[in-house]
Length: 198
Image (cartoon, rainbow, N blue to C red; front, side, top):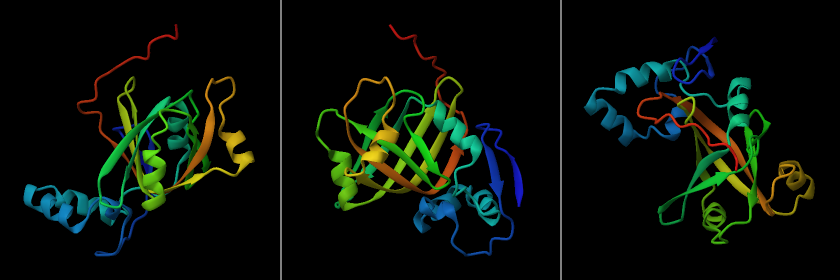
């Protein structure tokens, strides 16, 4: 096992050596055979194959990733309906509203919004999801793949996920089982500083 720090994001990485060629790795969640064919045609496949040989992307939430998540005040969640039509929605709240439940589970409260319920409906049909977290001040971004489910009848969980002193009505919780995550480089991320609250 090799542990180091990702120079792109500051998040500590963990690699496990010895992945057998052709075996399933975490990045297969995104690198389909077609994606790999495009990588090969455009010249990046060899570099990603070397990454995969060292086990590729992480599948558990490290303390450094947990600390990054705890600082965030927003993220985007992607879902798709049965026809494959994608949908992306913003979620926001106070720092820490996206919570680490354990090393493979994230959760957040669903605050009352426009009541379209597209994300909840999509997850009922297709639990696959992706979270995209971006910190504009530090120019860091994290991608999280997994499956998610809506929980409405667990009062203790809803209470745990409700931010104190935050004006919002909590309607449900969404639990995300992490399949893989990766840190991206800061290229092309504008540096923005959060404005002070009025």
